[in-house]
Length: 433
Image (cartoon, rainbow, N blue to C red; front, side, top):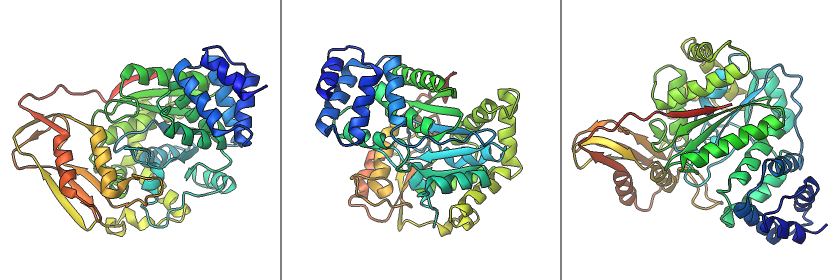
């Protein structure tokens, strides 16, 4: 069997066997197949696609390239994954809410990617917080606290990391089967039995078109079921940044405010929706409405905030940040972006806000860039709000920025202000099970 023949076969839109896919993935994992051949295979998949059988074989081979965690000793395990959005720090709220209900939440997250933030960077804005735990420490914390939030270890689907690096430089990131295999191989290897997917669509998402996002959601749900996982996917709108904070410590502060019961914006709504889906899927509530009330109760009672404090302390973080936000890193500069006219915010370009936040230092323009955890954007106005001329639309937070005036201009242009109030946007478009 040769890599050439497998690439040739897929290039000509023919179905690959399990043995062929396994040969290719194992060969690449063991450095027996070159980057240029895997790149050719990825491009062939981008244009020819994969059917359900091929996608299952690919996901399985990628998952089995490392360890698959056995969490069967834990009564109920559930995890949540988002396909990436602007201001999406929901893991910071969803994990403690769900864990405080007695459900084990093994959560392996990622770093900032492109214009979207990363959960790990947000957690690391908490002084001392350690996301780099090995598998044994991860499982120990999970048993102790019902939740642990860490980065992907070297043992979990290691070939995915190699393949993603190639996809990132060969224009094959947007392939639905490759996205599906990448996400689900890690989730399968992670071991959770109940998986909730938050699939974004809109100008701030990696997949803008709703129909394509729905197709991805359906593929991932189907693949998860083939691995005997209980799956639920929600399609959520990302044409407007989520919540009122973009940037690492800014989003952690917003999450804490939600856990304290002080904020009930769209970020809160999505956190409650995702938490209730995890609670219901895991059997901790008889129906979705009861699950939603339970999720809300965990905030009102203070149990979710107490769980978040426990998570922070167990991973060597300074939990005093919950009571004193000045313990986070602080930006030297905070500048207001003001509206030049009165009217309703008719729409926003979420992607541009993500890019602007990255340029302020909250993300990485290059792989080796350091993240400024304090940098980012706070939003005073969002879609549907009325704004007066001269009123503040948003504020930019930064310490080192070459040209903040250009970023202010970029943000101002990302607001579409008109005389007509827009129709209310439904944050949740569909649920797939």
